[in-house]
Image (tube, rainbow, N blue to C red; front, top):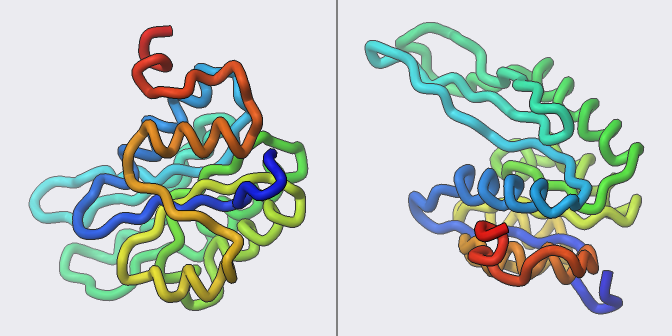
Length: 186
């Protein structure tokens, strides 16, 4: 890692930009470069007949899917987050950080993190362990994100080349191609 390089990067997304897709593509590209990555990615699985989507987190270490949304019925309103499943994801991330990885990718800094819970402690742990963190932040959570990181993070556009460039710089991983097109050619 370069001395003045921010240890945290957030992909800033306004509107309906496909953050989950961008993060999944980045993770796939990094895995093909032999970079040691860990973290979780969010996946939405849509049901039938107007059912709420099922939200799962994919553990990048072993591919395990953890369902974090509760089925509270078709007409239910409000939060469907399963706190037990989120605790399981957090435990897995703690283990990943303890084992050591070159980069930790987290699906997003969202409502739970803005309220002081969720994966905030995981981000803090990674920073204390010297592990760079890549995360996504949607517009409505930018003020909470800015308060949380206190100047330790940089913003990235939701573009593969820019994200891979930061990953390459922060990890010092010289064998990783500088451009996404180079990554796809190998």
